[in-house]
Length: 495
Image (cartoon, rainbow, N blue to C red; front, top):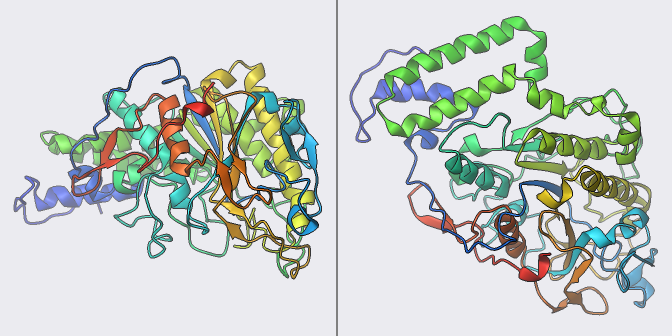
């Protein structure tokens, strides 16, 4: 129960024990105790203003869990021996001198809108989602699978939300600033969720608002290890299948549940009034408003409902969960969301997604590359046609790359983890057009020109979004930490 009787003894922070029990009820809406007790506010340094700073009004982040290979995507090596090059070849793009993998023909036609970096590098060949998506300077495998560990650093989208809230003087937005699709990362496979896409040190109130997807896949994806007959929604869904906001779909169908939520929120409001004198409880009101607006407002639901789009548009994106999630991301950006993340996560099996230790060529040729090629090119062209590309930063991120030499033992071959050199692609929001950054050796195994840290990409993204990457946030002890660790803005990436 929220109404609890207890000793009103005052604690050292000026709150009574009864106050803390009232506050404890906020956990139902993701508000942790340290959100309320808080620490000193983050410090946002004034950045040197130039035309590129703040160019992006919003961001779509596509995260490909498992790590795609550089050889078959954006750094093919057509002159390398067969054990390096593999079964796939290189094709020219519409930018002279730039070649990419031959199973990305649609992306090849829009290369003049993109920036490719071939020289990403770091020292952790692990599925370090937290390392890829936060400013944490080192990988700590002991807490990698503990999203709520107090030493975890906040997700880039959570920091964007945090600083945007500061700019708005705490006023809640009409639509959440930080939304993630299509389901909570790690919730549909065999292992617990990894850290990374969470508010972490900032508190769970800055977690992304996640959607969920309950339908089954319609198409059998290529084999993973010895598992067969596996239908993956990232490979195919029904046109009527939809995304939902957590349990909001259930709540909408059950008025009694909605009334129960109203009752709870009413009790929260009563508790809030009794605690107004303490400024550290301002977060309480924010969380209450967010929770209730998601239950009652149709704006988010309408934006997520990609079935409202013309079928011709939906088919351009592809009738897959990844395709329709990217379409929903565009709709959310149009509706006013600041930061939308689309996770291409492992579904059903931990060994899935882009982690191609087994059946590397089969999965790439018949599933991963065609789906990504269709959807990503459709997203870029759709944003451009709607006049949104210049204002929308699009990032495609992952943990690392894959080994230069093919492992021939598994069926269909395999490439293992490799972080010394890998590739990524970006577009819009001030990123360059038709640019190729960095160079690797003849086997795409080591960087030989313009090494780029994944932290540099985060720093550049913050810069384009109008947040000085040299700003700080505070850990639970009040110690200031840099947003992106050692990351620095890379001017060569910008238009």
